[in-house]
Image (cartoon, rainbow, N blue to C red):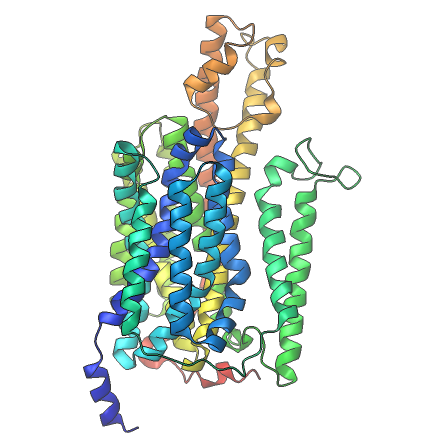
Amino acid sequence: MTAASTGTEEARRSWTPMVGLFLAQVLMSFNVAALPISLGGMVEDFGVPPTTASTTIVVYGLAVAALVMTGAKLGQRIGWVLIFRVVVVVFAGSSLLMILAQSIGWAISGQVLAGAAAAIIVPALVALIAENYRGAQQATAVGSLGSARAFSGMSAFLIGGTLGTLVGWRPVFGITLALAVAVFVLSFGLRSDRGDRTVKIDVVASVLIGAAVVLLTLGFNNLNGWGVIAARDAAPFSLAGLSPAPVLVVLGVVLGQLFFLRTRRRMRAGGRPLVDLGVLDRPEERAAVYAMFIIVAMEAAVNFTLPTYIQVVQGRTPFDTSLAMMPFNLTVFVTATLIVRFSRRYAPRTIALVSFGLTTAALVWLAFVVTNNWETLPTILGLVVFGIGQGALVTLVFNVLVTAAPKELAGDVGSIRGTTQNLASAVGTAVMGAVLVTLLTFGVTQAAESHPELPAELVEQVDLDSVNFVANDELRAVLAETDATPEQVDAAVALNEEQRLRTLKLGFLILAGISAVAAIPASRLPRYRPEEIPDPSPAGSGD
């Protein structure tokens, strides 16, 4: 095909199919963003602690990260358009499960189903963009996925917070159901592909990477409940007194390494791997993956911490949560939309270093200025600055991966993106929850020992091993069942308020440290501007 005919084809290509792909990204991101807002409602409806309700967030990311590479191969074999339509219907079914949920088990099952569907949607978006658009249209389409993700977070907090306050958390997932229906209808405008029946799925590699992701996520998610080192009573088993959580993490790392060894060996032998690691041949591409993992994990930690603190600790409504998070989500959306313009003038390395500098400064600032009142100007300023850095980074690092790989490896890029983002989201949520609860438990225990108005015999009546984030009214109800006097109850509530805020500040400082360390992979991102991008064809050679 000549350049002239290609240009004519690009000019004739309608953006209508891209609307469907844009909404598919909105569908997944809206679902994820709606879960933190729904935590308070699920805690109340199902009578479970916040950490149990947050399992819905973890299992979604777990399912996507464990299955996305296999999903990419299924798409190549069956055909991207056909399988895309099938999994959109599956996602609609998951929304129905959330709406009709009778217990937390229903909600968890619904998110497992949504995650399995998203495991195919994620690589399908990149592959279908590569199939349906060329040149400048393709670059614009890829960039729109970042803004769609940010737009979903903003709208989910606003719409979900309003519905959660006025109606309940279940109608929020009626929106995801409607989005799924719209995406299915618009999918009929996509170019059809028949798939390639010669594509074989490396079952052993699929099992290795799936098991690795499951073990890693389960291990991280249960560090607090089962014990970081020594096994606690809640642990399902112990190994000579050792908690199973770190054991699962180590096993996950081992299986992950075995996956990479098998994949490289298969590529050297000329076979078709589960994912072509050629897209990570260059140090710049590997740095992009590391940077993506860190920024998504930090975003997940913030999106878990703030709604949990506002709804559960302060006892405020989902609408209050949406207002508190609005500066952050709005800033992420605007930045993700505008960062493409800056990427035409500045190298990815420069933008990434500046962005991680902003996120680090914002988190340190929040650690010093955060109070029980989220509407203060210093707190809003901190969230805005963090949103600028986060919005720039998520879009930037994805574009680095896409522009570095040839078109035929679009599905592989999509699967790597999906694995990285969803594993990072699950780990960020789980680890932050474990860290905060551990810090709170330690702080409350130490503070109780140093307060003479809380005698040891009273402290013994409260199980400090099960300390969690609770509202003041809930704490008073627990203390009412003890021998505590009204004065002692007031002292305990004041102590808990002090330690909760202290824990939140320490959590921000820990995230700031992680953000600062991210400067290492960010410094290895490409130093060239888009017009200087080298030929990506070697990335797919597997050499």
